[in-house]
Figure 1 (tube, rainbow, N blue to C red):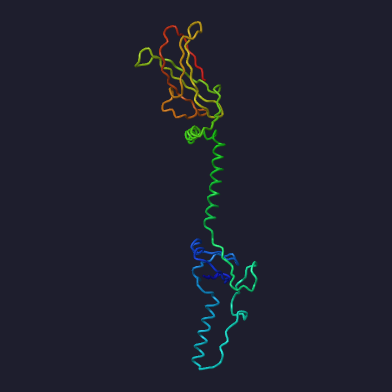
Figure 2: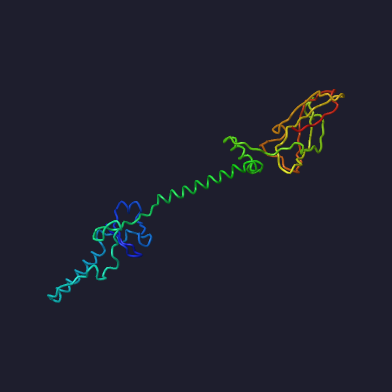
Length: 260
């Protein structure tokens, strides 16, 4: 079968397999334009169709005029054809049955290109997230997701921590109003570092007159913060803690805090 470029009028020989694979769209080997090959698709060459039409018209004229004049048909080199069919360089010019083959528009190649670009973009994004994981783990909106992802993937998160910058603002000890032999300790602490950091482990020790420890208890963030979700201690914002501890008795005359 044959088709013709509607831009430069170049003629190409194609197969139905090529047209089906390219969905009817071909790229012209002469002008590099994409055209719809189905519009000009034919089983004969365009020159043969024009030649047959000319022969038919002139035969009708000859019959009408009853003329014995010999009908002269246009020759291939007479300028009648708008464009000669180019011959490939690998074949001699004498081979009139050799034609150029149109290049189908390869949608599969373009799809692979898009997939490759998407994969590279995703790889760069993941690399950026991995590099910024420590910073993301300190942000309130992304901290939980980042830590869970790193736990799943096995990557380490290094969050800056300096317990010496956590200061005790106030403290108060009193008996629990509802439970006997239990002391309630209310504490206000503040992170004075320039960065957010994890809540500390709070150690409370009771001392006797000789400064000997008679009772000691350590509290994790899950114990002194309600609904703790691994959030970080913000800078410059006081945090109020309420701790309950068993009464160490009359031997304890004072207590002290330590952040770990």
